Length: 101
Image 1 (cartoon, one colour):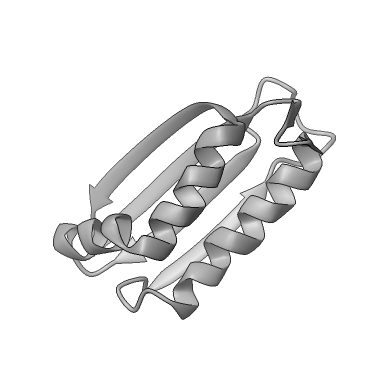
Image 2 (tube, one colour):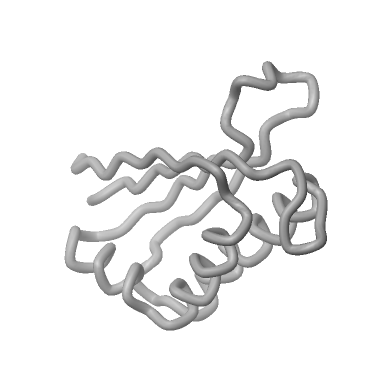
C-alpha cells in the first residue's frame, strides 16, 4: 500500500476568493475524487485549524493507493488534473511524501 501525503500553503487571496474559501473548495474537490477515480482507496483532506500556528501549511491531503502504479493513474486522471489545475492557481507552497507500508 502507498500512502500519499501532501501539504499545501495557500495565498491569502486568489482567483477572487479568500484563503478560507479556497481551502473549502479544495477540500470538497479533492475528497470528491473518490467518486471518479477507483484507484483511490481512502482520501481525507484537513484544513489547518484557525487557532493553530500560522506557520503551518493550510491544507493536508492524506490518501491511500494499492501501488505506485495506482497513484500514477490517479495523478494522470482528468478529474485529478482539473482539481490540481485549480490548486496550482491558489497555492504558494507544496510538500509531499509517498511511502510504502
